[in-house]
Length: 382
Image (cartoon, rainbow, N blue to C red):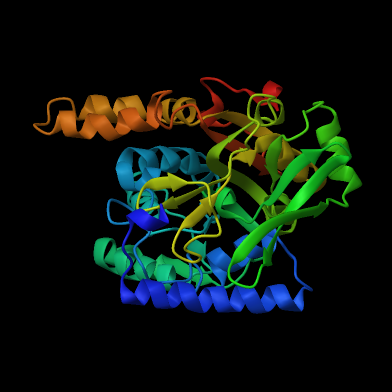
């Protein structure tokens, strides 16, 4: 991949500066940096990390595309689920983590206004200064009358009442990469060999993770990931939310499928300009890094935090339950209907995002059934 691409002078300089920071931290860590810490630096180091830079990440000019950018059908469907709660308790708020371009917030607020179900406020927790500016600009341009309802937070609030939304958030959290050996699982580490970054491994040192994986009798050489950061984030929601609903949308599997014997190379991938790669040590700060979500682990974390696992389903079934097909039916006479249909099919069909993307619904002090889980709830697979 490295030989087939050209970098701008700005990209090359930023990547080189990040590499220097990573090298210095490796030295401070006595030569070995846990892969999760390396991934944290590569993605989030202020000003230099992938998500901290102002470079385009979304859409055709970036490295990936998310559901809200494909079609407003996604955001309108999410709004339908949110409106269920707001119709009962209009004083509640919406809290979105990692809002990307801000497009989901724009569509959700626009649809909630149409439904006469606007929340008391729409809060966004965004750690990327560049993305925060982009979100603010988009919201001012597209929904100026609603812009004053939107607030940006530097960290998680406490004692919220309302709906928490996390769309493609967990997959970008730093993961430990593991490899099974004859003496048990070992974690991958990043070192410096004098000229460049290098991979090695060391004992995992986590009996809990060892026990979790031992149940699957995985072969020597089996590679996988564990996302302790995402588990900790879900567990923290017990303090964030006093009453309401959490919607986690991401690509992933239940644990039995996640650690399937045939998934012996794990799920970790890098993306650069829409091209997948598997070498995280190249182009630090310039490529996205991601791993699928173990939704069973997220459900367990929710349970530990006092949240209720209220539903689990595929993205396709969630969107259908929330009226995606009716949205299409309303536009069938439009001249651009075929153009409208194509991205919706990508969201719904198994070969696109429909099956591998899942929706996990968590609640606290909210006993009502959820519209998004009406078609098919697959909690039994967790």
